[in-house]
Length: 583
Image 1 (cartoon, helix red, strand yellow):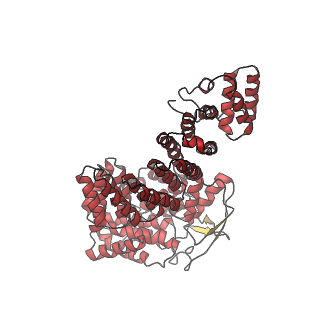
Image 2: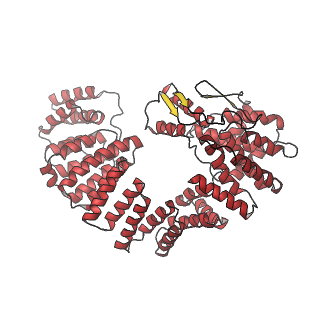
């Protein structure tokens, strides 16, 4: 079978109708037609007794499983599953299990694992199987399930972990089965069990691979020191495989043991391992140690050449310069779970431990209404001072709040022309300097009368482009509008005062957008650096609460370190603050 199709279930007949057609075809001895419709019914409802009964009837028709269910190119998973069931019924267990595990890998959302669990309940059958081939067979299912959406993967991998545990009772001496067992447990979220499995196997038959399994299990369980110890044991057991040095380096980096991480990456490079991973990771560690921009430039060059590891690490080095961080509010986590399929219904009541950014709450409620037709009822604690009120009297108040704390824009939408300009700017690939320059071109014919229009765009963004999550789009438009505000004409410190109005306003993503724009303003004008630095100190002094942390403190701690020509004392102070916030 060259490739398995997922398309069986996408037709206009019900499983009952397919089975009726199949039964009629069997009466006419049209077995090929009957098999076709049985496979369709099985694809839709694998556990339906009526479909399995017809499969059992086909087992006695005198034709082989291969004749009834040929696995031609692009054979459907229903055909493959039906053939596997028939082969198992007729005693062809090895091939049946291999085929069924491929089906599970393609469709982990359907209950085909229950078939597998039923089959391997026969201990005599399992004992007679080739364990090495069986491990390879299971890996098809586990790897396919691991790649599914989180909610599906958790359930399917949990069931596959239980199946693997049953098989291991008959084949306890096969190390690869222990590794597969642990991998399924980890993806199912059962990390403590995965650690126990790995520790037992490493004690029973210690090897390079058992130490690797143990390291991965401990790492997923959050035991970083234990994970590094296991990876170091793997290194001691097999000095020829330098790939483990990357794992040692990565865990050391997670532990903030930068000297150990640097040593591991250097050794990996010396042994020709990690062509892209190790050099990028080494530059990142060195930047964390001394903050030298030369290390950042190495990361930028590697990221620009397409290296995924460098792009990932560069996010941590210069957020808001080359990329905009994703919103991290709890309500945004709920939205992402709904979007990924992990949550299939809207929460009826949503209690938030502390008030979050109005933009985030608005997007969560709007997304639930679009998806389910209703938004959850909200309850939350309001910190003191109240972040729903401007931090300074007279500053930005772009939202008003309903009795359940749900935000509603307090100003009217912008003119269509302004919305279109912001759409064009926010649609560009993000680099702060490029956006700033483009903003200048887009608003060169506007004057200070456009200030309220740009403010309106922050809470009434134009429609999001296809494929862009609306919450990310809102963030992008807010940054675009803040950069545009910096270009509008004004006397003296009008630019800084204009953006400070947002920093001092209601605590929201708009505060972050203004801080981003102020950073770029300072990078273009040495005369404004001191004023921006003083404003950043003022922002950092805001009384701590979760929403203040997310919208003011965390972004300003990164952005302050992007201001040009700062003293060593300034840099040290803000690095310390950034590290404290990370803790």
